[in-house]
Image (cartoon, rainbow, N blue to C red; front, side, top):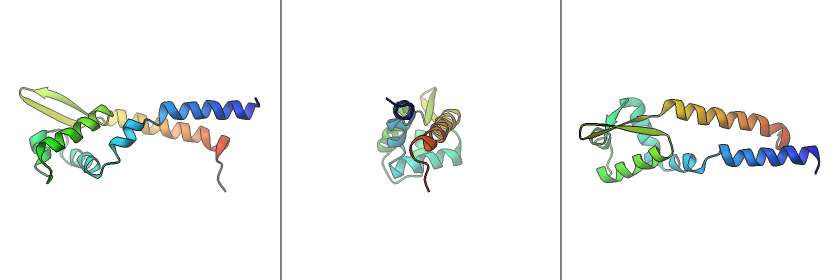
Length: 114
């Protein structure tokens, strides 16, 4: 195996680790992107406050928030009987930076463009 082939194999394996499908799948649904927008505007909020701005039922919004939480995009805390959601800014930034680092490594190896 040539050195270039080794580098390409390493880069391809790194893609699997960094390009997390749960993260991207969570953002592929327009309602979830709108939920991210709502949390940017509101900061932290409970499900009732968040759902008030959407036409979907509160239970549907809750399921979307669970998907975002599982992907690390939002997190929640319990305050009494309320579950408070907010964006997980540091996690989002770290994932995006990891993707950029990976792409900066990949481009010269596999896809330099024109």
